[in-house]
Image (cartoon, rainbow, N blue to C red; front, side, top):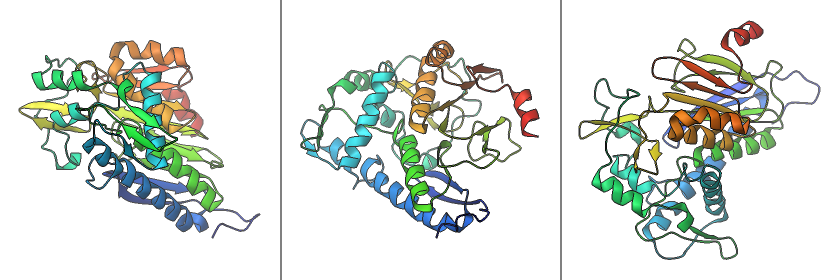
Length: 332
Protein backbone atom coordinates (compact mmCIF):
# COMPACT_ATOMS: atom_id res chain seq x y z
CA UNK A 1 0.00 0.00 0.00
CA UNK A 2 1.20 3.58 -0.61
CA UNK A 3 2.82 5.30 2.35
CA UNK A 4 0.86 7.45 4.81
CA UNK A 5 0.86 11.16 3.82
CA UNK A 6 3.33 13.19 5.86
CA UNK A 7 5.60 10.25 6.63
CA UNK A 8 9.14 10.10 5.25
CA UNK A 9 9.25 7.81 2.22
CA UNK A 10 12.26 5.58 1.60
CA UNK A 11 13.19 4.56 -1.95
CA UNK A 12 13.15 1.00 -3.24
CA UNK A 13 14.01 -0.86 -6.42
CA UNK A 14 13.27 -4.13 -8.21
CA UNK A 15 14.83 -5.93 -11.16
CA UNK A 16 13.53 -8.65 -13.48
CA UNK A 17 13.67 -9.83 -17.10
CA UNK A 18 11.17 -8.87 -19.82
CA UNK A 19 11.29 -8.23 -23.57
CA UNK A 20 14.53 -10.24 -23.66
CA UNK A 21 16.32 -7.63 -21.54
CA UNK A 22 16.66 -6.30 -18.00
CA UNK A 23 13.94 -4.22 -16.37
CA UNK A 24 14.94 -1.93 -13.50
CA UNK A 25 12.21 -0.28 -11.44
CA UNK A 26 12.83 2.43 -8.86
CA UNK A 27 10.21 3.89 -6.57
CA UNK A 28 10.45 6.86 -4.22
CA UNK A 29 8.31 4.95 -1.69
CA UNK A 30 9.46 1.51 -0.52
CA UNK A 31 6.05 0.73 0.96
CA UNK A 32 4.50 1.01 -2.53
CA UNK A 33 7.04 -1.05 -4.48
CA UNK A 34 4.92 -4.23 -4.56
CA UNK A 35 1.91 -2.39 -5.98
CA UNK A 36 4.09 -0.48 -8.43
CA UNK A 37 5.84 -3.62 -9.68
CA UNK A 38 2.58 -5.54 -10.10
CA UNK A 39 1.06 -2.72 -12.17
CA UNK A 40 4.18 -2.38 -14.31
CA UNK A 41 4.43 -6.13 -14.95
CA UNK A 42 0.79 -6.30 -16.05
CA UNK A 43 1.38 -3.46 -18.51
CA UNK A 44 4.58 -4.96 -19.92
CA UNK A 45 2.97 -8.40 -20.28
CA UNK A 46 0.10 -6.89 -22.27
CA UNK A 47 2.51 -5.00 -24.54
CA UNK A 48 4.61 -8.14 -25.08
CA UNK A 49 1.53 -10.10 -26.16
CA UNK A 50 0.65 -7.34 -28.60
CA UNK A 51 4.04 -6.30 -30.01
CA UNK A 52 6.59 -9.10 -29.72
CA UNK A 53 8.26 -10.29 -32.92
CA UNK A 54 9.51 -13.40 -31.12
CA UNK A 55 6.15 -14.72 -29.88
CA UNK A 56 4.19 -16.82 -32.34
CA UNK A 57 1.00 -15.95 -30.44
CA UNK A 58 1.50 -12.17 -30.49
CA UNK A 59 -0.76 -9.83 -32.42
CA UNK A 60 2.24 -8.53 -34.36
CA UNK A 61 3.07 -12.06 -35.54
CA UNK A 62 -0.53 -12.45 -36.65
CA UNK A 63 -0.36 -9.20 -38.65
CA UNK A 64 2.94 -10.24 -40.26
CA UNK A 65 1.46 -13.62 -41.15
CA UNK A 66 -1.53 -11.95 -42.82
CA UNK A 67 0.44 -9.45 -44.92
CA UNK A 68 -1.74 -8.21 -47.76
CA UNK A 69 -4.95 -8.75 -45.77
CA UNK A 70 -6.71 -6.63 -43.16
CA UNK A 71 -6.36 -7.99 -39.62
CA UNK A 72 -8.36 -7.00 -36.54
CA UNK A 73 -6.12 -6.09 -33.60
CA UNK A 74 -6.38 -4.60 -30.13
CA UNK A 75 -6.32 -0.86 -29.41
CA UNK A 76 -2.95 -1.47 -27.73
CA UNK A 77 -1.31 -2.64 -30.96
CA UNK A 78 -3.05 0.16 -32.88
CA UNK A 79 -1.41 2.67 -30.56
CA UNK A 80 1.98 0.94 -30.85
CA UNK A 81 1.76 1.11 -34.65
CA UNK A 82 0.74 4.77 -34.56
CA UNK A 83 3.80 5.47 -32.42
CA UNK A 84 6.00 3.66 -34.95
CA UNK A 85 4.45 5.54 -37.89
CA UNK A 86 4.91 8.84 -36.07
CA UNK A 87 8.60 7.96 -35.63
CA UNK A 88 8.90 7.28 -39.36
CA UNK A 89 7.20 10.58 -40.17
CA UNK A 90 9.37 12.60 -37.77
CA UNK A 91 12.62 11.09 -39.07
CA UNK A 92 11.83 11.03 -42.77
CA UNK A 93 11.82 7.23 -42.75
CA UNK A 94 15.12 6.76 -40.88
CA UNK A 95 13.18 4.89 -38.19
CA UNK A 96 11.05 2.52 -40.28
CA UNK A 97 8.89 -0.25 -38.74
CA UNK A 98 8.87 -2.19 -42.03
CA UNK A 99 12.52 -3.31 -41.77
CA UNK A 100 11.53 -6.58 -40.10
CA UNK A 101 12.65 -8.69 -43.05
CA UNK A 102 16.01 -6.89 -43.17
CA UNK A 103 16.56 -7.59 -39.47
CA UNK A 104 15.80 -11.26 -40.03
CA UNK A 105 18.20 -11.40 -42.99
CA UNK A 106 20.86 -9.91 -40.72
CA UNK A 107 20.31 -12.93 -38.47
CA UNK A 108 18.25 -11.31 -35.71
CA UNK A 109 15.47 -13.90 -35.86
CA UNK A 110 15.50 -14.93 -32.18
CA UNK A 111 16.37 -13.48 -28.79
CA UNK A 112 19.73 -11.80 -29.38
CA UNK A 113 21.29 -13.64 -26.43
CA UNK A 114 20.90 -16.84 -28.46
CA UNK A 115 22.82 -15.44 -31.43
CA UNK A 116 26.45 -16.30 -32.17
CA UNK A 117 29.03 -13.83 -30.89
CA UNK A 118 30.41 -11.25 -33.32
CA UNK A 119 33.83 -11.91 -34.89
CA UNK A 120 36.83 -10.70 -32.91
CA UNK A 121 37.72 -7.08 -33.65
CA UNK A 122 34.33 -6.34 -35.19
CA UNK A 123 32.44 -3.12 -34.75
CA UNK A 124 34.95 -0.54 -35.91
CA UNK A 125 33.57 2.76 -37.10
CA UNK A 126 34.98 2.56 -40.60
CA UNK A 127 33.43 -0.79 -41.49
CA UNK A 128 31.57 -0.62 -44.81
CA UNK A 129 30.05 -3.33 -46.97
CA UNK A 130 27.99 -3.29 -50.12
CA UNK A 131 24.40 -4.40 -49.46
CA UNK A 132 23.66 -8.03 -50.24
CA UNK A 133 21.15 -9.06 -52.88
CA UNK A 134 18.82 -10.26 -50.11
CA UNK A 135 19.06 -6.89 -48.35
CA UNK A 136 18.23 -5.07 -51.60
CA UNK A 137 15.10 -7.20 -52.01
CA UNK A 138 14.14 -6.49 -48.40
CA UNK A 139 14.65 -2.77 -48.94
CA UNK A 140 12.46 -2.76 -52.03
CA UNK A 141 9.67 -4.39 -50.04
CA UNK A 142 9.96 -1.95 -47.14
CA UNK A 143 8.05 1.27 -46.86
CA UNK A 144 6.16 2.57 -43.86
CA UNK A 145 3.74 4.58 -45.99
CA UNK A 146 2.17 1.31 -47.13
CA UNK A 147 0.85 0.49 -43.65
CA UNK A 148 -2.90 1.05 -43.24
CA UNK A 149 -4.14 1.54 -39.68
CA UNK A 150 -7.89 1.94 -39.16
CA UNK A 151 -8.91 2.91 -35.63
CA UNK A 152 -12.62 2.77 -36.47
CA UNK A 153 -12.52 -0.92 -37.36
CA UNK A 154 -9.46 -1.59 -35.13
CA UNK A 155 -7.69 -3.20 -38.07
CA UNK A 156 -4.27 -3.16 -39.72
CA UNK A 157 -3.12 -4.08 -43.21
CA UNK A 158 0.50 -4.25 -44.33
CA UNK A 159 1.70 -4.82 -47.92
CA UNK A 160 2.57 -8.31 -49.10
CA UNK A 161 6.21 -9.17 -48.48
CA UNK A 162 6.51 -6.73 -45.57
CA UNK A 163 7.33 -7.78 -42.01
CA UNK A 164 6.93 -5.32 -39.19
CA UNK A 165 9.42 -4.87 -36.37
CA UNK A 166 8.58 -2.40 -33.59
CA UNK A 167 11.89 -2.72 -31.78
CA UNK A 168 12.89 0.88 -32.51
CA UNK A 169 9.89 2.30 -30.63
CA UNK A 170 7.94 -0.28 -28.61
CA UNK A 171 10.44 -0.77 -25.78
CA UNK A 172 10.70 2.95 -25.04
CA UNK A 173 6.93 3.37 -25.42
CA UNK A 174 6.47 0.49 -22.97
CA UNK A 175 8.77 2.27 -20.51
CA UNK A 176 6.63 5.43 -20.74
CA UNK A 177 3.41 3.50 -20.22
CA UNK A 178 4.88 1.35 -17.47
CA UNK A 179 6.22 4.32 -15.52
CA UNK A 180 2.84 6.03 -15.75
CA UNK A 181 0.78 3.07 -14.53
CA UNK A 182 3.36 2.37 -11.81
CA UNK A 183 3.22 5.93 -10.49
CA UNK A 184 -0.58 5.81 -10.52
CA UNK A 185 -0.63 2.49 -8.65
CA UNK A 186 1.85 3.55 -5.98
CA UNK A 187 1.04 7.24 -5.63
CA UNK A 188 4.76 7.96 -5.79
CA UNK A 189 7.62 8.80 -8.11
CA UNK A 190 8.77 6.04 -10.47
CA UNK A 191 11.72 5.44 -12.76
CA UNK A 192 11.45 2.51 -15.17
CA UNK A 193 14.36 1.30 -17.30
CA UNK A 194 13.80 -1.34 -19.98
CA UNK A 195 17.11 -2.30 -21.49
CA UNK A 196 18.46 1.19 -20.79
CA UNK A 197 15.43 3.05 -22.16
CA UNK A 198 14.40 5.14 -19.16
CA UNK A 199 11.07 6.77 -18.35
CA UNK A 200 10.03 8.67 -15.24
CA UNK A 201 6.69 9.69 -13.79
CA UNK A 202 5.70 11.46 -10.60
CA UNK A 203 7.91 13.33 -8.14
CA UNK A 204 11.64 12.65 -8.37
CA UNK A 205 13.95 12.10 -5.40
CA UNK A 206 15.39 15.28 -3.88
CA UNK A 207 18.62 14.97 -5.87
CA UNK A 208 16.85 13.72 -8.99
CA UNK A 209 17.22 10.31 -10.58
CA UNK A 210 20.94 9.57 -10.95
CA UNK A 211 21.81 7.54 -14.06
CA UNK A 212 25.06 6.20 -15.46
CA UNK A 213 25.12 6.84 -19.21
CA UNK A 214 27.28 4.14 -20.82
CA UNK A 215 27.35 1.68 -23.74
CA UNK A 216 25.66 -1.18 -21.91
CA UNK A 217 22.82 -0.72 -19.43
CA UNK A 218 23.99 -3.87 -17.62
CA UNK A 219 27.34 -2.31 -16.72
CA UNK A 220 28.31 -1.56 -13.14
CA UNK A 221 28.95 1.90 -11.73
CA UNK A 222 32.67 1.64 -12.54
CA UNK A 223 32.02 1.36 -16.31
CA UNK A 224 33.23 4.19 -18.56
CA UNK A 225 30.57 6.80 -19.12
CA UNK A 226 28.95 9.77 -17.45
CA UNK A 227 26.67 10.04 -14.43
CA UNK A 228 23.82 12.49 -14.92
CA UNK A 229 20.70 13.42 -13.00
CA UNK A 230 17.19 13.92 -14.40
CA UNK A 231 14.01 15.01 -12.61
CA UNK A 232 11.42 14.20 -15.26
CA UNK A 233 10.94 13.03 -18.82
CA UNK A 234 12.87 10.25 -20.49
CA UNK A 235 16.37 9.23 -21.44
CA UNK A 236 17.38 6.74 -24.13
CA UNK A 237 20.71 5.27 -25.17
CA UNK A 238 21.25 3.37 -28.42
CA UNK A 239 24.54 1.67 -29.22
CA UNK A 240 26.05 -0.25 -32.10
CA UNK A 241 28.75 -1.66 -29.80
CA UNK A 242 26.81 -3.97 -27.49
CA UNK A 243 24.02 -5.89 -29.18
CA UNK A 244 26.21 -7.55 -31.84
CA UNK A 245 26.34 -11.04 -33.27
CA UNK A 246 28.22 -12.86 -36.01
CA UNK A 247 26.68 -13.99 -39.28
CA UNK A 248 28.67 -15.48 -42.18
CA UNK A 249 31.88 -14.08 -40.75
CA UNK A 250 30.51 -10.56 -40.43
CA UNK A 251 29.59 -8.45 -37.43
CA UNK A 252 25.91 -7.54 -37.27
CA UNK A 253 23.84 -5.27 -35.06
CA UNK A 254 20.20 -4.28 -34.73
CA UNK A 255 20.21 -0.70 -36.08
CA UNK A 256 19.05 -1.06 -39.69
CA UNK A 257 19.51 1.64 -42.32
CA UNK A 258 16.25 1.54 -44.33
CA UNK A 259 18.09 2.89 -47.37
CA UNK A 260 20.33 -0.17 -47.62
CA UNK A 261 18.41 -2.82 -45.70
CA UNK A 262 21.65 -3.57 -43.80
CA UNK A 263 22.96 -2.73 -40.32
CA UNK A 264 24.14 0.87 -40.44
CA UNK A 265 27.91 1.25 -40.88
CA UNK A 266 30.41 4.04 -40.16
CA UNK A 267 28.35 5.63 -37.42
CA UNK A 268 28.60 6.55 -33.75
CA UNK A 269 29.42 3.98 -31.12
CA UNK A 270 26.70 5.17 -28.73
CA UNK A 271 24.13 7.98 -28.69
CA UNK A 272 22.14 9.16 -25.65
CA UNK A 273 19.29 11.69 -25.79
CA UNK A 274 17.06 13.29 -23.16
CA UNK A 275 13.52 14.32 -24.12
CA UNK A 276 10.06 14.95 -22.72
CA UNK A 277 9.45 11.19 -22.78
CA UNK A 278 11.41 8.02 -23.43
CA UNK A 279 9.68 7.35 -26.75
CA UNK A 280 10.84 10.61 -28.29
CA UNK A 281 14.32 10.16 -26.82
CA UNK A 282 14.66 6.70 -28.38
CA UNK A 283 13.34 7.83 -31.76
CA UNK A 284 16.09 10.44 -31.74
CA UNK A 285 18.89 8.06 -30.72
CA UNK A 286 17.97 5.51 -33.39
CA UNK A 287 17.69 8.14 -36.12
CA UNK A 288 20.99 9.68 -35.00
CA UNK A 289 22.79 6.37 -35.52
CA UNK A 290 21.25 6.07 -39.00
CA UNK A 291 22.15 9.68 -39.87
CA UNK A 292 25.72 9.24 -38.57
CA UNK A 293 27.74 12.40 -39.35
CA UNK A 294 24.59 14.47 -39.88
CA UNK A 295 23.25 13.60 -36.42
CA UNK A 296 24.76 16.43 -34.35
CA UNK A 297 23.30 19.18 -36.53
CA UNK A 298 19.94 17.41 -36.69
CA UNK A 299 19.74 16.93 -32.90
CA UNK A 300 20.76 20.56 -32.33
CA UNK A 301 18.00 21.73 -34.67
CA UNK A 302 15.50 19.88 -32.49
CA UNK A 303 16.88 21.32 -29.26
CA UNK A 304 17.42 17.86 -27.78
CA UNK A 305 20.20 17.43 -25.20
CA UNK A 306 22.41 14.61 -26.45
CA UNK A 307 25.73 12.86 -25.94
CA UNK A 308 27.40 11.13 -28.91
CA UNK A 309 30.37 8.81 -28.37
CA UNK A 310 32.60 7.88 -31.31
CA UNK A 311 34.73 4.76 -31.71
CA UNK A 312 37.91 6.55 -30.56
CA UNK A 313 36.28 7.61 -27.29
CA UNK A 314 35.58 11.19 -28.34
CA UNK A 315 32.42 12.75 -26.90
CA UNK A 316 30.22 15.31 -28.64
CA UNK A 317 27.51 17.00 -26.55
CA UNK A 318 24.48 18.81 -27.93
CA UNK A 319 22.33 21.61 -26.51
CA UNK A 320 22.08 21.57 -22.69
CA UNK A 321 23.65 18.16 -22.10
CA UNK A 322 25.94 18.79 -19.10
CA UNK A 323 29.70 18.91 -19.39
CA UNK A 324 31.15 15.92 -17.59
CA UNK A 325 33.45 17.78 -15.20
CA UNK A 326 30.85 20.37 -14.24
CA UNK A 327 28.20 17.72 -13.58
CA UNK A 328 30.45 15.57 -11.41
CA UNK A 329 31.25 18.60 -9.24
CA UNK A 330 27.54 19.44 -8.90
CA UNK A 331 26.70 15.87 -7.81
CA UNK A 332 29.38 15.70 -5.11
